[in-house]
Structure formats: structure tokens, C-alpha cells
View 1 (cartoon, rainbow, N blue to C red):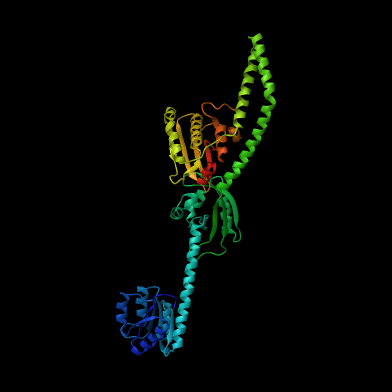
View 2 (cartoon, helix red, strand yellow):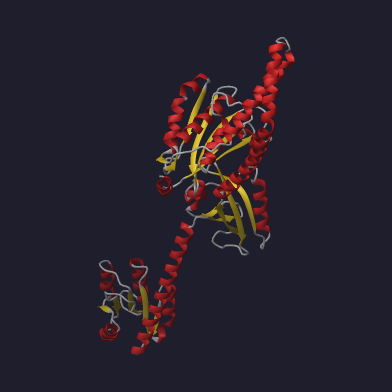
Length: 485
């Protein structure tokens, strides 16, 4: 018997009382609790009141046969193991009973060793079944709780399975994903989709072809998720799904891509900054001399238009040098715990009248489950206000500014998107260099500098007429706050 504090109850049904007692005595010796019925009808009634883990039933009984009783038992308790007790002449019936769900059979006359051997086989099967169940349960938990999106795809390119990571990575529950035809392809960025579809088709055509591709996905909230897609074909068709399938995973690498983008953009801007600083240092003294000389000439020859041009341009260059010096000066910040969503709502409220005057509305798509961050809320507010102002100034007519928040494993992201009309920027990194006037705001360069000092990033993307400025900042922790204090 399997280890248990309570003996397993075993049903014994045979119209021969002596045979019942023989089986019962063996079962008691093995630690079971036998319950005897010589009338199969009484056994059927008992099945409505209690459950049995094991049953020994005679194949040939009046009124109700062993096959009929076995059927009753399986309906009442599908997990009950059934052993058919049969004579030599009814072996065929015993085999039929096994086909109907009986676990084993023993032939009359039998010995104690026969019953004990039968019990051991049943116990071994139960132990094996339990191990298989636990292994399957562990596998299921592992698959469902994996941080990777795991899927199985039909040759129709519809999902057969997807784990819970579909919700955390792309915002869709497994049920939503599997009920949507073509869900996986629809989630892939339109620019990457043709290549991915071609690779998937090839994987179905070639039984040994697998591929790995870095591509972009669209989250349910419409922000971009960077991921690695890896697919492995199955060499054989699956009878259950009536077709071929491939299995694959999607790993969210958004934080890695952000880090790479941060390092690359920082390197570019650092290089430009170094060059700008060197140029500023080299030309400042000559520029001051030129400006002073131009002023003296203007005093002597006030009507000289060329002198005024020289003076105006030298003053403009001096202002640019001042902006470069300010840009290269580190900005201090003070950490506090706060909600980014609340800060953004305050920014929109401050600029609501200004936006209304321009015929611009706001659409706030804020993730309500964002954790609090440990950064400087005043700097986030400054950046938010200036990016909204930048959006308002770039829109030539009434429209909508969309502000969206979302998170990845290590970072919080804020998208400011709006429609613009004009030529696509060829070198967007120049937006963040201090070469142009800031206007009413502190300007994009200082926004970039403020975020960089907090370990964040300001990035820019443009597709057709839609521009998106993305603020990415680390979540931070209370430990960071305590360390700074």
C-alpha cells in the first residue's frame, strides 16, 4: 500500500462469501481496509455513499455481471483501480473488462502470492502515475511561470498554445492570444513581419530548419517591445492538432536594447560634446577679440552695415558657447519616492489652457500598475513640461498628443507622441546638442542632460508623420535613496 496515515478502502464483490473472506484476509495483512458485498446491487448502492481506491469483483455474478459493475464503479470513481476475479472459461470477459478500464485480473483458483503480486503491480503503477503527474505539474508550472513567452504554432500560423508570459511581455492573456487568428504575426512590427513570416513558412517546409531573429513587437498598449524570436520545427505531425507545428520562444530584450541605445547615443553625444568643448575653448578668445574690435569700429563708423553683421554674429556665437558650457556642467538631483503617473497628470493640467488655445487635446494612456520610482520628481516634471511644449510647437494644426507609460524589467518608459508634417530627420541625435536656441523651454538638449544625470535616456523615433520622444529612467530603489542621503 502507498504510504498513508489512513488505510485505503478496498471493495470486494463476489457471490461466494468464502472467496470474499479469503481476499479480505490477505488485504488486511497488507494494511488495507476491505469492504465486502456478496450482492452486486448492494455494492452499486454503496458507491453512492463512499469511494474506494481499489475493487476486486467477480466476473460472473447473477443479476449484475462483473462487466456491468465495473462500468458502475468507473462512472462513480474514474480513479478506482479494478481487479477482475475470473475463472479460466471467462478469460475473454476479463480481457474485455480490462479494455473497459479494469487494471488487472486474477484467475481462480488463486494463492496469497497472486493477490500480493497483483497489489504490488497496482502500487507500482500508482507510484509511477503519481511521479508522472508531479513531473507534468512541475513542467506546467515551469512553462507557465517562465519569463520567456513560449508558444506552439500551427502550420496555419495560428497559436495552439502560449504561456502566461504573453500577458507580461505583450499585454495579452493566453486566452486572448489563442482566440485571435494570426495573433503572433499581427504583434510583429510591420517592417519586420514579412521576413518573420517567410522564415516561419520555411520552417514548416523544411523539417530541420530553425531560426533566431531579433525583431520588434507591438504591445497591446501600442508601445514597442524588442525581442528575440527563436523557432524550432517539429519533424513529425501532431495527430491531436491534425497538422504540423513549430514551437518557439520570445525573449524580451527591451532593457538590453535600451542600454545599447543609451551607450551608443551617449558615445555620439560625448564625442560631439568633446568636439564642441574644444572648439569653444579654441575660438572663445579670438571671438572676444573680434567682438571687441567690432564694437570699436561701430563706435567710429556707426553707419557700417558690415560691422553690425560681424558684431551680431560674434554675439550669437558667444551665446552658443555659453550654452555649451552650461550643457557640459553636471546637474545635481535629489531622489524621492514618487509616482511618475501623478507627475505627468500635473504637467498636463499646467499646460491644459495652452494646449486648448492651440486646438490640441491630450490622450493619457498611463499604466496603473507602475511602481513608484526613486528619482527627482522636479526633473521629471521639467522634462515632461518641455516635451509637451515641444510637441505643441511642432504641430502645425490641431491634433492630439498621446502620453503613454509602461515598464520593462528595469526601467520605466514615457512616450510623448504626436503628428507632425515635414522632412524626416536624418540625424536625430543633433536634437539633443546645445546648438540652437531653447525658446520658451529649457530645450531638448537640457532635457537629455537632466535625464542622463539620473541614469536615464531621451530618445527619438519617427515613422511617417508620427514622432515619438521616449523618456526611459531606471526604477531605482529605496537603497539608492538611502545611499544618496
